Amino acid sequence: MLIHGFDMYRVFLSAPGDLAREREFCRSVISEVNSNHAMPARILLVPVGLTNDGQIVGFRSAVSENIRDSTFFIQLFEDDWGPKNLFRKMFFLAAECRDDPALPMRDVIVCLKAAPHETDPEILAFRKELQDRADMRVLHFTTLEDLRPQLAEICAAWVDAIRERASAAGQP
Image (cartoon, rainbow, N blue to C red; front, side, top):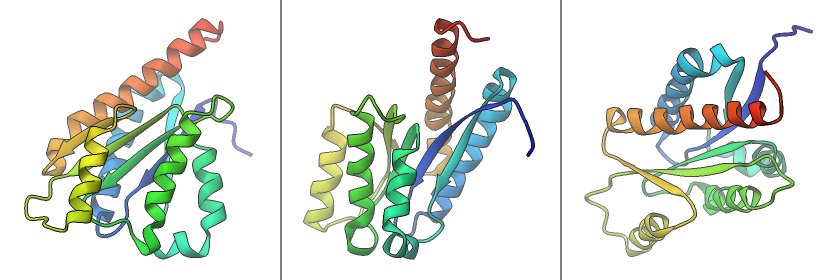
Protein backbone atom coordinates (compact mmCIF):
# COMPACT_ATOMS: atom_id res chain seq x y z
CA MET A 1 0.00 0.00 0.00
CA LEU A 2 1.31 3.40 -0.99
CA ILE A 3 1.32 5.92 1.84
CA HIS A 4 1.02 9.36 0.34
CA GLY A 5 0.33 11.62 3.33
CA PHE A 6 -2.54 13.51 1.68
CA ASP A 7 -5.98 14.09 3.18
CA MET A 8 -8.46 13.18 0.45
CA TYR A 9 -11.94 14.66 -0.02
CA ARG A 10 -14.33 13.21 -2.58
CA VAL A 11 -16.08 15.53 -5.03
CA PHE A 12 -19.03 13.81 -6.71
CA LEU A 13 -19.59 15.11 -10.24
CA SER A 14 -23.13 14.61 -11.51
CA ALA A 15 -23.59 15.32 -15.22
CA PRO A 16 -26.55 13.68 -16.91
CA GLY A 17 -27.35 13.62 -20.60
CA ASP A 18 -24.92 15.09 -23.02
CA LEU A 19 -22.73 16.96 -20.50
CA ALA A 20 -19.82 14.52 -20.47
CA ARG A 21 -17.50 17.18 -21.89
CA GLU A 22 -18.49 19.58 -19.09
CA ARG A 23 -17.95 16.83 -16.49
CA GLU A 24 -14.43 16.20 -17.79
CA PHE A 25 -13.77 19.93 -17.79
CA CYS A 26 -14.74 20.04 -14.08
CA ARG A 27 -12.24 17.24 -13.45
CA SER A 28 -9.51 19.31 -15.11
CA VAL A 29 -10.38 22.40 -13.03
CA ILE A 30 -10.25 20.30 -9.85
CA SER A 31 -6.88 18.95 -10.98
CA GLU A 32 -5.59 22.52 -11.46
CA VAL A 33 -6.81 23.51 -7.99
CA ASN A 34 -5.14 20.41 -6.57
CA SER A 35 -1.83 21.28 -8.21
CA ASN A 36 -1.86 24.97 -7.41
CA HIS A 37 -3.67 25.17 -4.10
CA ALA A 38 -4.45 21.86 -2.41
CA MET A 39 -1.36 19.69 -2.79
CA PRO A 40 1.01 22.16 -1.12
CA ALA A 41 -1.28 21.80 1.92
CA ARG A 42 -1.23 17.96 1.60
CA ILE A 43 -4.91 17.96 0.54
CA LEU A 44 -6.47 16.30 -2.51
CA LEU A 45 -9.91 16.88 -3.96
CA VAL A 46 -10.76 13.56 -5.62
CA PRO A 47 -13.41 13.72 -8.35
CA VAL A 48 -15.74 10.72 -8.50
CA GLY A 49 -18.91 10.01 -10.43
CA LEU A 50 -20.45 8.07 -13.27
CA THR A 51 -18.85 7.80 -16.67
CA ASN A 52 -22.14 7.12 -18.47
CA ASP A 53 -25.84 7.40 -17.76
CA GLY A 54 -26.46 3.65 -17.87
CA GLN A 55 -24.43 3.10 -14.71
CA ILE A 56 -27.02 4.89 -12.60
CA VAL A 57 -29.68 2.35 -13.54
CA GLY A 58 -27.55 -0.74 -12.92
CA PHE A 59 -25.69 0.46 -9.82
CA ARG A 60 -28.14 2.80 -8.11
CA SER A 61 -27.34 1.63 -4.57
CA ALA A 62 -23.58 1.96 -5.10
CA VAL A 63 -24.06 5.42 -6.63
CA SER A 64 -26.08 6.51 -3.59
CA GLU A 65 -23.36 5.25 -1.25
CA ASN A 66 -20.72 7.13 -3.22
CA ILE A 67 -22.74 10.32 -2.80
CA ARG A 68 -23.12 9.68 0.94
CA ASP A 69 -19.34 9.21 1.20
CA SER A 70 -18.51 12.44 -0.67
CA THR A 71 -17.63 15.78 0.89
CA PHE A 72 -18.69 17.95 -2.04
CA PHE A 73 -21.19 17.59 -4.88
CA ILE A 74 -21.22 19.38 -8.22
CA GLN A 75 -24.41 19.13 -10.28
CA LEU A 76 -24.11 20.04 -13.95
CA PHE A 77 -27.45 20.71 -15.60
CA GLU A 78 -28.80 21.98 -18.85
CA ASP A 79 -31.96 20.19 -19.96
CA ASP A 80 -31.88 16.47 -19.16
CA TRP A 81 -31.99 14.46 -15.93
CA GLY A 82 -30.90 11.25 -17.61
CA PRO A 83 -32.67 7.88 -17.42
CA LYS A 84 -35.82 7.89 -15.31
CA ASN A 85 -34.82 11.26 -13.77
CA LEU A 86 -32.38 9.37 -11.54
CA PHE A 87 -29.78 12.15 -11.67
CA ARG A 88 -32.38 14.45 -10.14
CA LYS A 89 -32.81 11.97 -7.28
CA MET A 90 -29.02 11.94 -6.82
CA PHE A 91 -29.04 15.74 -6.61
CA PHE A 92 -31.72 15.73 -3.91
CA LEU A 93 -29.85 12.98 -2.04
CA ALA A 94 -26.72 15.17 -2.06
CA ALA A 95 -28.69 18.08 -0.58
CA GLU A 96 -30.08 15.79 2.14
CA CYS A 97 -26.56 14.52 2.90
CA ARG A 98 -25.27 18.09 3.17
CA ASP A 99 -27.98 18.84 5.72
CA ASP A 100 -27.07 15.80 7.85
CA PRO A 101 -24.14 16.69 10.13
CA ALA A 102 -23.34 12.98 10.62
CA LEU A 103 -22.35 12.70 6.94
CA PRO A 104 -19.24 14.18 5.30
CA MET A 105 -21.12 16.25 2.65
CA ARG A 106 -20.34 19.94 3.19
CA ASP A 107 -21.39 21.70 0.00
CA VAL A 108 -23.59 21.20 -3.05
CA ILE A 109 -23.29 23.50 -6.03
CA VAL A 110 -25.09 23.67 -9.36
CA CYS A 111 -23.40 24.57 -12.63
CA LEU A 112 -26.27 25.65 -14.86
CA LYS A 113 -25.42 25.75 -18.55
CA ALA A 114 -27.23 28.39 -20.60
CA ALA A 115 -30.10 27.01 -22.66
CA PRO A 116 -31.35 30.03 -24.60
CA HIS A 117 -33.45 27.97 -27.02
CA GLU A 118 -35.15 25.79 -24.39
CA THR A 119 -38.96 25.87 -24.63
CA ASP A 120 -40.04 22.80 -22.67
CA PRO A 121 -42.08 24.19 -19.74
CA GLU A 122 -41.02 21.35 -17.40
CA ILE A 123 -37.33 21.98 -18.03
CA LEU A 124 -37.76 25.75 -17.76
CA ALA A 125 -39.60 25.32 -14.45
CA PHE A 126 -36.85 23.12 -13.01
CA ARG A 127 -34.13 25.52 -14.21
CA LYS A 128 -35.98 28.28 -12.36
CA GLU A 129 -36.33 26.09 -9.25
CA LEU A 130 -32.55 25.51 -9.27
CA GLN A 131 -31.82 29.21 -9.76
CA ASP A 132 -34.14 30.17 -6.90
CA ARG A 133 -32.65 27.78 -4.33
CA ALA A 134 -31.35 29.75 -1.39
CA ASP A 135 -29.48 26.78 0.11
CA MET A 136 -26.81 26.42 -2.60
CA ARG A 137 -24.78 28.38 -5.09
CA VAL A 138 -25.72 28.28 -8.74
CA LEU A 139 -22.96 29.01 -11.25
CA HIS A 140 -24.23 30.17 -14.63
CA PHE A 141 -22.14 29.51 -17.72
CA THR A 142 -22.40 29.55 -21.48
CA THR A 143 -18.93 28.29 -22.35
CA LEU A 144 -16.51 26.17 -20.39
CA GLU A 145 -14.19 29.16 -20.06
CA ASP A 146 -17.06 31.04 -18.36
CA LEU A 147 -17.21 28.23 -15.81
CA ARG A 148 -13.46 27.93 -15.11
CA PRO A 149 -12.91 30.91 -12.76
CA GLN A 150 -16.16 30.34 -10.86
CA LEU A 151 -15.50 26.65 -10.24
CA ALA A 152 -11.81 27.19 -9.44
CA GLU A 153 -12.74 29.82 -6.86
CA ILE A 154 -15.21 27.48 -5.15
CA CYS A 155 -12.81 24.53 -5.13
CA ALA A 156 -10.03 26.72 -3.72
CA ALA A 157 -12.44 27.94 -1.02
CA TRP A 158 -13.19 24.30 -0.14
CA VAL A 159 -9.46 23.70 0.31
CA ASP A 160 -9.16 26.82 2.47
CA ALA A 161 -12.07 25.65 4.65
CA ILE A 162 -10.46 22.22 5.05
CA ARG A 163 -7.19 23.89 6.08
CA GLU A 164 -9.00 26.14 8.57
CA ARG A 165 -10.84 23.19 10.15
CA ALA A 166 -7.56 21.27 10.43
CA SER A 167 -5.84 24.29 11.96
CA ALA A 168 -8.68 24.79 14.46
CA ALA A 169 -8.38 21.11 15.38
CA GLY A 170 -4.65 21.58 16.02
CA GLN A 171 -3.50 19.65 12.95
CA PRO A 172 -0.65 20.93 10.77
